[in-house]
Image (cartoon, rainbow over all chains, first blue to last red):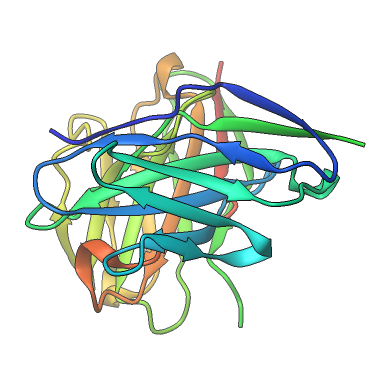
Length: 114
Length: 116
């Protein structure tokens, strides 16, 4: 069975500082990894995904994520946080040869302080 | 381009009553998903459609939940009868359906159901 762990319920960072939101996964087969962001009373919005190739994936709004196969991680990063980045972030995984059912993490609340 | 549309946005009902949610996916998207999101949790897939065919419904509680996607476009998710534990946000998502498990999903705003 596949699983996703987001070990931090909340991440606090000052505006202008770099941010990292952590995600680790467990799958059988090759992982396909996604990050989504959810603003209050809104649906999830796609940020980026890793399918294959370059381990560093660049996405929307200046976010990027690094796939690390040996550590089974896919941490979300941004060099300089904005107050408007404050939201709930979800990591998700599917796997090659699987049933196309994505597994989502519990979410991490990012709070960027002015 | 319009995104995924869901209605209603909010619904409050008494337990044992029926309720239905509607979803209109992005035009041209063949795959449609219904998710359940409990407070403080990530979305959990209830059912996935490829066109009008339900291809993943193992997590749909079939004793009280039903779904349909007539003509492979709009979809309706129904609960009858509703229970207190059904209070949650019901999300609809769609994707092009060209690349299976690597597809990017686009989510609607969700319907927040409260069962009293």
